[in-house]
Length: 363
Ligand SMILES: *Cc1c(COP(=O)(O)O)cnc(C)c1O
Image (cartoon, rainbow, N blue to C red; front, side):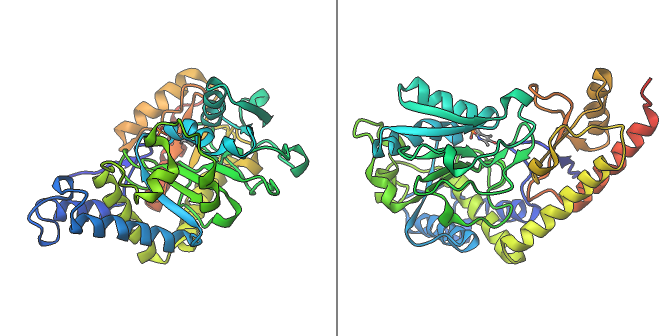
């Protein structure tokens, strides 16, 4: 068996101890005589799995009691529609900050549905190389919510602060930074995240919502998008994504076992610093993101020469460092270094970058 260092933006690496536990549980989970994939979601053994996953997440993120935790289907993209359907009834309007492709999609989805939504800040003019500055006076006081994307997976940017939106609830897409470091959940009305970046296999989407925000849903919305209905049914209005929830639970336990999100953050900072320090120490590679907006999870860089940008991911793959090709809208390279990426993987990457620069001088 040989495993590569997988820098994919998602689906992405899972922790080896979690994969090993999945393998050992596969044929007979805990004496049930079946795998978690095969069991009824209404069975006591599965009810225990989903309850344990929620309890672990609550502990890990220190989620206050007045927040509901939902495990849903449809990916983060489905939440682009669910957010206005559940919340805009508060005042009939909403504000969006567009800091990249996914927040742009969220904004467009709400527009397409005919809602009165406004983009109050964007960094589009500089190809999303930074997080736009957001101050309290920019927020519409009568907005139902303000929507942001906390970490921009494609561009490699992240909010270095939590925007102060006053009494207007803040809604954050945290798909690519969830459980990478502690966050103060009480500063947000809603946090949502697709699981396949940092939590689990694809298939489950996490929604953490403050209870008082469950009162504004559009009565005509599809049941599957209705947070209140899902909360009343413990995420089991219909069949939940059972196996992905089970893996998510194992990932939460893995982090709790190492000491929680403070420890996770320290590890992630060390990995990101190794890569950014190298990028800042040389001029062969260019890191396009403004320093104060740098992501700890997705690190983008280019050589500035098209052929070399093409050659890099190919040769890296041959060296066991895979999925380093950047998103087509940025070009160049992107290293996604989520929780499960070991420090050693980033060390190998930096060594490879040095070798590549030496062997491929620019004309
Ligand atoms: C990947 C990603 C999405 C899209 O997630 P899906 O689960 O594929 O719908 C949305 N937002 C962010 C920040 C992402 O990284």
